[in-house]
Image 1 (cartoon, one colour):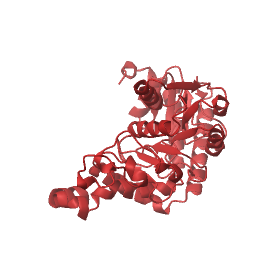
Image 2 (image 1 turned 90 degrees about the vertical axis):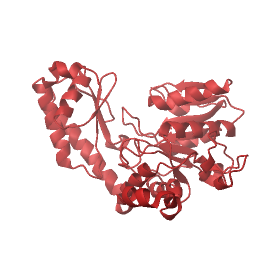
Image 3 (image 1 turned 180 degrees about the vertical axis):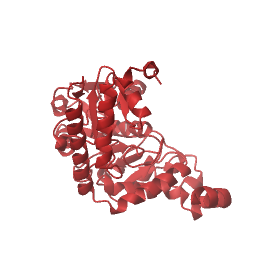
Length: 360
């Protein structure tokens, strides 16, 4: 409200300085940093996850210019792989190679891999990768690692610094509650950032943007990964949502998160045992992120019926229904109610309404 009614409508361009708008990418980045194991001045916020993936992948490839391969998971979230394919399409001499899904990712590393791009928590299966072990294996092979934290931040403690991570990106509209289309964040290791050159050299990544110099000179450290003008309204909303995290104990949050998903799985299996549901996430809560996925042959219809009843989950093709539990504000009672509604939809075949067959 203050941003819209005072800073925006009355302050006008004065607010770029007086209200700190120009510093929002760094201000908000410093709020995210403790949630992902980064330090002050190591995270900036702006653009989308896809755009930030492009920046970091390009920078990583240049740091390993003698190598040709981006290594990725074939079943990773599609935008990660689309961005990698698009980037190598511009370079001409690079390729994307996909690791086998049934083998440890480290088995696919060799001396031709420049960068490994990987999700910390898989968007469908909720499998948590061992960030420290995978990063160490990549470094032993001479490769860099880019982690996508979109399903991690706000769910479990992440320690980018402790794991010696090279690059990381993530969205803020899931567990960080930034709202639809909220800007994403970028992290680059302090040991690398001074040597990186990201391809989207926008004016606010310049060392002195208001000099309006004809030639680009990168900003100090992570600021060079800022591209264009800050998205003020989105960043202001995100800034407010992140203030809630200052007093949150992340280990305690993780404990609640695991208990909620364990409770939900147990309740679903107790009440839906005769239904065609198959658990599609690790049963061990330690290896599982904070969403629970089941496969069902009529998954799309089932989720449409649930949404109509106020249980807002996701459908992921071809047959996955996914329930994400935000431990900051959801309750154990919410998990029990969701399981009960799922049982009702299946037992009474409420999903078999022709309306729910129409794809949105």
